[in-house]
Image (cartoon, rainbow, N blue to C red):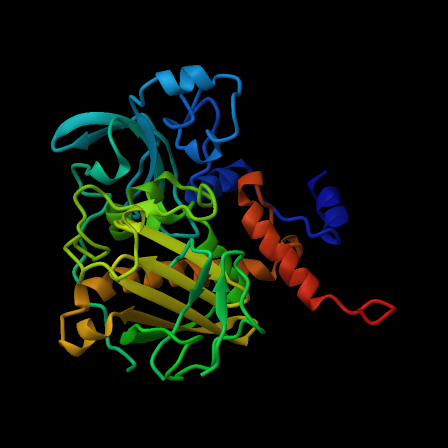
Length: 392
């Protein structure tokens, strides 16, 4: 029977993937299992599915109960530092030596090389520390040598001192051809008043479209970005997308700036409103630019595809000119995003081999909350489609 099904399905891209494979992959992505990670007794906010609730669309079944009911516990996706650890589920989770919850699901993540798990506990995801320090353990290290903002705004010009202009619009499209210059150029896109504080280049063994997908979702954030989720606890909830266009993730109460240790940054960029302070905004500019905005600086990623499985990513940290001119220490500010870059890019390189599978020919399987990634897939497909009979 197996041989017959296998031979019949080969031309259709069938792969050997059993329940264990699906369970491992869904834990890496933070997908919840009904009856195991959540039940009818959990509210969407407690199950980490608050991103699917639209409170601005009027009345809906269960709204009154949802607004009345306090969030007594929360499901969080975490990862063990020790890849050899064995966790099966129902193990207690400790905060400060006191029991604070339990493991609902766990298993080895073969893509990330770690043990992801889902825990139920009171409080916020960023508050959790287990006895063995599995989550958000501080790792020593520096930002690395230098080679030289995610924004929910209606219109933004991004510039690095010294090329071609392109405009970032609220619809996520790049002005003109959306290109961002060339590797090593002194200028990214546009003309702005910010100064280049640091530039780091990364040479990845991954396709540029895979890097875009990684940037556009945060299922993986809790399992591979402990430093980031310390500062932006919302990202530990595993959202597929932001709540709405213009939404900015709030800083943790204890974080004074977007730095590797939560220490203060360099003061708010002039012109930002109070509602934009202590928040992180993001936008993807098609085809290959990411903009990250925080109150005191802008982080700009530009991708330069060199081969189907190789991309150079150039990352610039931009600050007010007086901050750069003063010789201020930028290390804590740069190090956070640099660590996140290394973590993301390592995940992309581990995922790249799977893109050769025929099962990935249509871009993989997406769930409804990944509509923004589906829109990106359609945009790419339309851009590379051969012209029709009328030449269009």
